[in-house]
Length: 63
Image (tube, rainbow, N blue to C red):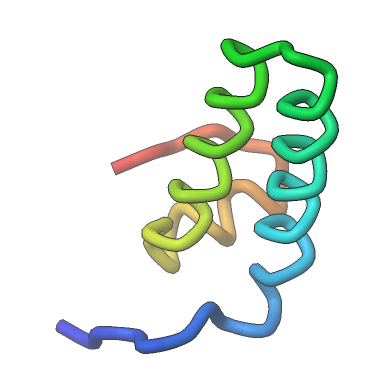
């Protein structure tokens, strides 16, 4: 099993987008929506390679 200490370059745009959405929702006081985006950002950091390629093909297969 390979452990990453940083986010793979191909995943960074998705991670950053979710963090931006989190900040926007948090600043508006939409805490539930902000939390959902924070969770999605977290999921991008732990997504498996197989799931990542499926996501690129618009197929939702999560481990």
